[in-house]
Amino acid sequence: MRTVGEPVKQIQPEGPAGPAPLPFREFLIKVQSSCNLACDYCYVYRAADTGWRTQPRTMASATAEQVCHRIAEHARDHALSSLQIVLHGGEPLLAGPSFLDALLGRLRTALPSSTRADLVIQTNGTLVDDAVLALCHEYGVRLGVSLDGGPAVNDRHRVDHAGRGSHDAVAKVLRRLGQDRHRPVWAGLLCTVDVTTDPLAVYEHLLSFQPPAIDLMLPLGNWDHPPPHRSADPASVPYADWLRAVFDRWYPAPGPPTRIPFFEAVIDLVLGGAGGIESVGGGPSRMVVVDTDGSLTQSDQLKTAYDGAPGTGRDVWRDSFDTLLTHPGILARQAGTGALCEECRACPVLRVCGGGHYPHRYRQGSGFANPSVYSPDLRSLIGHVSRTVLGDLDRLIEGGLPR
Amino acid sequence: MVTNGESGESTSALPDLTDVPLDEVMSSSDSALTQALRRVLRQTTGAEPPISAYSSGGQLLRLDEAEAGQQG
Image 1 (cartoon, rainbow over the protein chains, first blue to last red):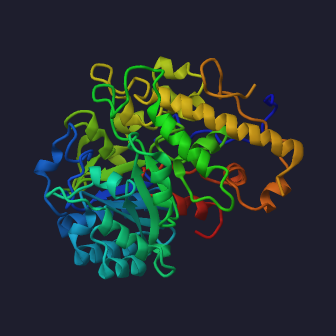
Image 2 (cartoon, helix red, strand yellow):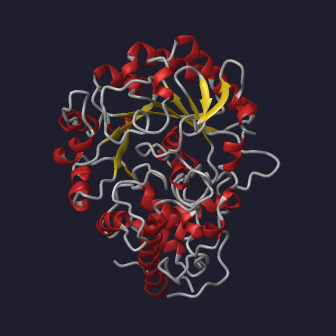
């Protein structure tokens, strides 16, 4: 292995926030609180938080208008050069084309011309039709589509309210999105990892649709409610094993690899860069959620911790996004290593792991001041990626790139 | 030593990139490693580091690329 010399300029995380919290750059808008699927791992309906029960099914037009105003206000006040807006649910396409048309049109006109907005709809994919695709093309919106693998894998979890699998309907849509004319409006696939599946079969199935990116997401869980098959034995690393198999297929593949943000983030961090995703690296979170009724909340994935965990008591009618920047929950996620527990701060893979995904750290009593419940898996996977990448870096420096 | 994350080993130190053949990396065909090196090099010159994006089907990619001055 190589010894460490003086590195070229390296990216440092933006935290700790210090006297001026970082403005939000990612806005998740819950336009619909209901869903036409009933996935068994859904963190909206099956987790500790029950906020969805009191939310309106669809965001009211007046609320949507106020959300656009608040986002534009934040962009102007902080001279944001770019931001991301994700329409989310529930299933956001249940809000209907006319609602989405009005919202997207308002967003485009409300935002300052100096702010570049990346618009995404995160969907289960079952309701994508001509009208949706036309909207995506008109407003430059991209679709992130959830799919967990082939029919037997996907339909184990992703079923409708009658228990019918969603794979075939989604696959039909993905084949359309893969056509040249629709590829510009396809962000990629979101796959929740199931360690009981064959990782290579899942990967190859997802790859068969030729997606621009595959996001691999670890199931939400924490120390009180561990993820499936994540035992207390630190020697057991089923998620690292699953991900390592996919990494070993993906990493050496010839040609431009299909982007896998999780792997890219780990490699970038190993090389001294920034990760760019919230589940590793410990970078500051700059994301805020607007619920269907206009409430301002922290990450909706905190719903897995305890009832009411994402709540802030603020809403778009009374409060600007700025008022949320001093909320303790927001500050904690911008504090970098300062917000981590002692065990994490002493960990040899901290620089890459960053404490893992914030919701995965929760334990009743100590809150989020714990290592990730996936800590053994993260440590094992980071070790594997690090060995692979740094070994290749050695070879690159010694002999150049293979021809 | 830059080693790995298994017990007793560490990724806390930064790798030394000073001897990386940059011209070759920038002009070479794509691989996961060369793409990563390009991203890290772009980050060192970027005005604003990438956000820690929410997992949502790859939506972070366009901004990263746009900030790098590339086509999305």
